[in-house]
Image (cartoon, rainbow, N blue to C red; front, top):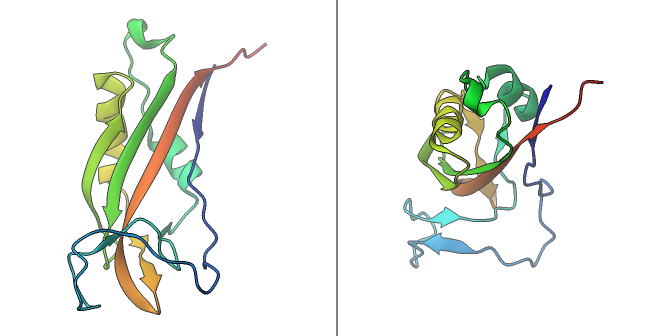
Amino acid sequence: MILLTFALLSFSSKLPQGVALYAQRGIGENSEDTASVFSVAQEMPSYQEDISTYLAKNFKYPGSESFRNVQGSVVVQFIVEKDGTLSDIHIIRSLCPEFDKEVLRIIKIMSKWNPGKNDGRLVRVKYILPMTFKISDSN
């Protein structure tokens, strides 16, 4: 039996007041800067359904016999845009090309997310999603 786990990065929905936010790039004096991508937001993006259930339901384990004993992690990174769509989707830690391709496929077909917010304004947020593939005994 193959067990698929998702080590989701979890943040509380709101940061305590006074916690500084880090912007990865594009920060200017204009707070409406649309190029800004935050690593942390006061309200982090969230998927509209249970993300673990979605990933487990949609992931298709590579069918070849040679992949039966493959275990490890794939880490995917993407940006949750202000409208909830995903952009800049890419693998930052690879397991093997077949698993990477499947992870990219299921992330690309996800419905919209609830976007991140800072001070009540929608912001672009970088999101990192680690996925672990582990074989467990069914006995």
